[in-house]
Image 1 (cartoon, helix red, strand yellow):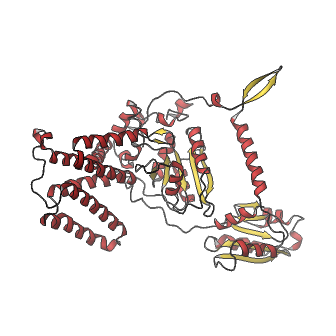
Image 2: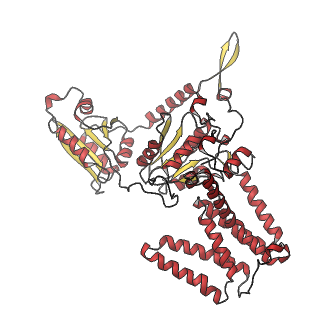
Length: 540
């Protein structure tokens, strides 16, 4: 959870509204155009574009079936099912994907329709089926053929009536998935044990359960020409910065790709566009309570269907080192755990390079650090030992991911014997390299953000190579360049190193110390929330 801080007042949106010119007594005077009117005009333009791109639905059942065979692969794809029936002397067809259809609901619909008499139908058969004879909760009319195919492939069932240019879409679907479980990367000792799953509807419901706010908004979009992936933008309407929401929405809408089969990672690369920067500019979370807390602070959450992780935007470096466990303990214990985690992250970055620097230049060591250094020689140069040790840890991590659970213990024992014992006894490594490498690896695994831990490892390798080549100047040069690059980085136009740069001492204090809930009264000022105070009575 991010700390709160005081800052300048929020900007007035009316001052930057576009203007239209209206003639007054022979001269023109500018008048601000309300935001709602601009949105209505944009919606009208969008509706016009949609009407132009509409493809009509065939007017006869035979043409309808033929079009399904041509475009949807009916009779070639075994999971595309078309059920032809006659109700009230009206030929009908039900189209659905076999794996998505919820058979109990569709069976009840068909059972109700079997009792239909021809005399019960009014002049408008479609309206009669819609309002009287199809007992489904979510049902809408659709006259665009492309939207019909998209919705059918997304799990809906299409009910077609012969001779009608409009059909009914019945939301009777069930997705293959698993039950909410505690995420493996964000475990807590005390707290909820539910986590996000691969079904987006379940994920937004888990957040809605914790945020029963009428101003919580879920905006749905579809991306990918072929995948038609569902993407949901979540924010609290009277807290989140409108410009931030609009910026995220516009960037997502501008994406033009064949599809997003890798879900959130491809969406991140397409929107953030950070190039070769290893540091993550987006925070991921699989915990509904973490997402709810960030929404209350003014962040925007992006849900992507088929993935159990949610993007939290924008993100700073210090957001990525926060963990839910700190807020599940008392303020004192939470602060202690936070400091331990910070020490581990610092060790994963600088412990190995600094020890290497003291080893190659013993004159830099203060008297109380005389014991630091290499006690025995090795057959390999020191820098080669570090590089091989780093690669060895990465290989073990990859092997642990790909090794079946019954064999993981045996793999760990083999790796420990090979690297920790035999490598030292044969003279390839020295004991100190193994020791400090193990401490640095523990610090990397203690980093809450997996992506941040990997980025720190790359920087650590660069520092080791710089120390081996240039010693002290190399260490200082690489550290300075990395810090400057991080300071210049921005996540959705928000400074990445806030509150260190730009400096905000109140927010920085909130990062160092875990404040009690009642003392954490304001939201982070870098998010420019519409309501800075967290106390409801004060906002009223």
